[in-house]
Image 1 (tube, protein in one colour):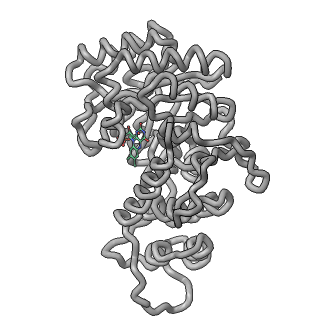
Image 2 (cartoon, rainbow, N blue to C red):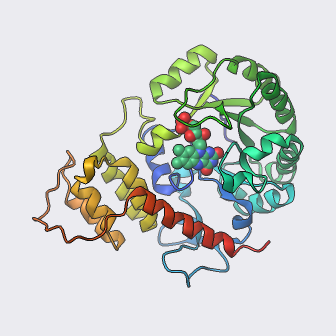
Image 3 (spheres, helix red, strand yellow):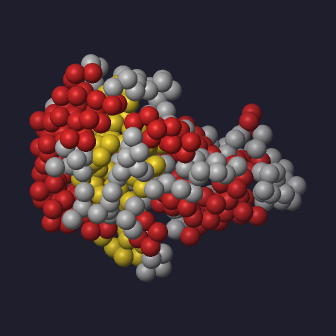
Length: 367
Ligand SMILES: Cc1cc2nc3c(=O)[nH]c(=O)nc-3n(C[C@H](O)[C@H](O)[C@H](O)COP(=O)(O)O)c2cc1C
């Protein structure tokens, strides 16, 4: 069983946390990795398929999406050879029954199931998921205890939950007291309230009180929010005890090697390593473009490699641009190119495409 204590971990991040990012994080020092949140309704429409070419376990939407150009049927992919013992699957849900049904589909191929009770986005909260669960603690506790009994125990997998702070300290502590009684193995606290944005400094005033409650119930605690490096993780351990764990999101979004005690890779090396994993596991072109767009600096749109990646119509064009046409300093080393005026997709455009893809996938879900 996974031990969440004294770990530095990759946060769940929609779109960013697909297989290439997770493997990069693991290679450079992350102790555990969370997958991106996947909604219960989407997962229950998926079936498990072993992929003999990639040696991966794939979860594929049964009622495929082939008719919608650019969309993908792949819901989740894991490479057990490297992720075994280290992969936490995050579920978005507002229903104990659906949560159990969905978690059973992946339980044997992941190392823990986590519930997202912190996402403040409209998409999550309007259907009672994510941060909305902070206002319905009975529903949240019922989801967690159902998972503990019906998935955690039979599959021998730990169940955990990720929350945000409530506006008042006592409200948060009350919630934590309820959560630790459900049989969960770990609690992750994003040390910001639902209203706070990621750029704002986290509130760490009463982490020691949260930890006391967790310790008494033998539940491990991961703190999240504003943590930037391995060195900061060590500082947190000095402050809150050697068994505290830390989770990094934003800094790992721009550089998934941020976990490295020797410091993160410079961006050209990072991009090359990312692309090698993307190529090995046939990552979706839109997703690779999206992740690379955050990793590679494109000051005033002048980075030729960024332009080539952004304009790529095939996966091979991405691989060629990053692996063959860029040196270790990030300089373009290909043949002279004319600007053919092709449209450059910026991150917002890519996000729109991925949103459409997700909306198409969800439209097909009738549960
Ligand atoms: C691109 C992105 C996607 C995210 N997706 C998720 C998600 O799927 N599930 C979740 O619980 N939190 C998600 N979050 C929130 C992070 O896991 C984390 O709680 C938050 O960013 C604070 O950590 P940080 O200060 O290190 O960024 C996401 C954050 C980012 C930046």
